[in-house]
Length: 320
Ligand code: NAD
Ligand code: UDP
Image 1 (spheres, rainbow, N blue to C red):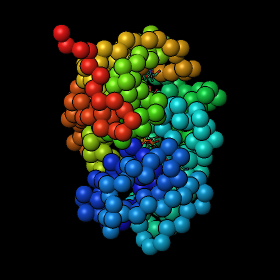
Image 2 (image 1 turned 180 degrees about the vertical axis):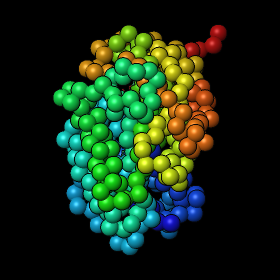
Image 3 (image 1 turned 60 degrees about the horizontal axis):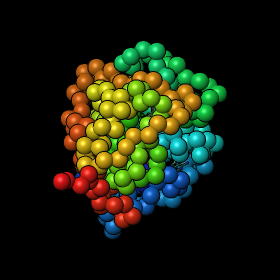
């Protein structure tokens, strides 16, 4: 089959592209490289079943030839990135989703939208099932991302109902792994880079807020299963094991062998207190559950960062 992956040069898009190529399909990547990197796709080299179109999904998009499926992942995703690119983020979620839905309709292609746990905002229900409608500020700094994704879900369901487009919506919870940018500002990449450099790990607030971290291969498996299932309503895909940010700092120190101290910083506005997916629907409808424990995923991610030029190898506490 022939697929379009928007955001293909990003962290998740590049892993999804690998999976699709590995399944024997042809992939057209679309990316404007605002937060992605060509290096994430460099290993595909001269792969004849892959091509990258450098363009903005928020502008009119044209693709030659037919498409069987579209995976719409293009959007800044790290809070640091979407606060730096607020208008671009709103445009990717709103206009980009509209454009890809229009393309799906024209080609008769199935479309999967990458939505987010951020549609639940700072949740008042814990863990979060898909039926929870969320606690989101429409005007706070994070609204550029949260509301763009909520609009993206709404227009995806509207195209499904009004035009019969064959759509899927995945609500992705915090996912980590190789190919995150060292400077993308998310907690896993920040802590690993800080630990390897031997500088303090920056804990925002008191570090008692929680997140549930999913390794990238588990996430890609969930996306692929959802794409191939007959489910049009949103489905949570994430790892339900919940950690405080302080727990995560300890695990990163253990995985790197670093003796970096912890340092507290101000908690960003509207930073969610807790987050954990209820994955009953993914389990029942897709037979999916995550397999890679955080300790294992962190080790693989640390190995990736250690091998990057410009980052020191292990900064261990010197053994006596
Ligand atoms: P990323 O920043 O690594 O990748 C996003 C990619 O989209 C980048 O390559 C970027 O250049 C591209 N892009 C952004 N705006 C674009 C535009 N207008 N036109 C073309 N390309 C554009 O982020 P990621 O973690 O890989 O996230 C991918 C998707 O998954 C995003 O939609 C994000 O909202 C969603 N998501 C990710 C997570 C996570 O934990 N990683 C959690 C929830 C949702
Ligand atoms: N965080 C932190 N230190 C960092 C980066 C993030 O303590 O250097 C916290 C952040 O405040 C949030 C959690 O870690 O509570 C997850 O942040 P991230 O940016 O990874 O994603 P979010 O889940 O907030 O979208």
